[in-house]
Length: 96
Image (cartoon, rainbow, N blue to C red; front, side):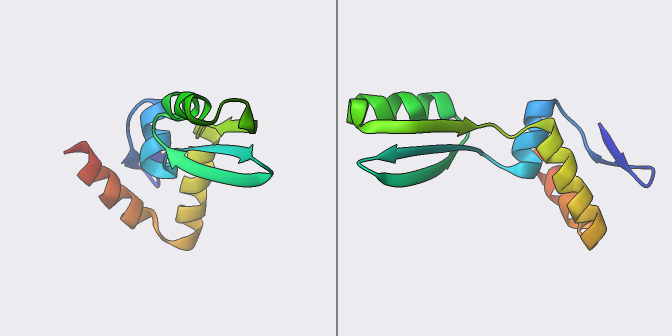
């Protein structure tokens, strides 16, 4: 549970909050010298598919999962910019 000014602005597990507030995880890789990036909610399956399709042509694989710290920093940025109400409203809709 995350409180701001005495009001609950987010509730859930660290993973749920990260996906709701920060967004999807990011997979980055290089293939044939070309860099790529893709946002996904299942980075393990996406990486498996990459290697199934392209094998050893995939290099520099990096999976960046949204963390609780990312969630906190996003909420702080929203609070500082006055967007907390929009975040709370979006999260309320996600709970339904």
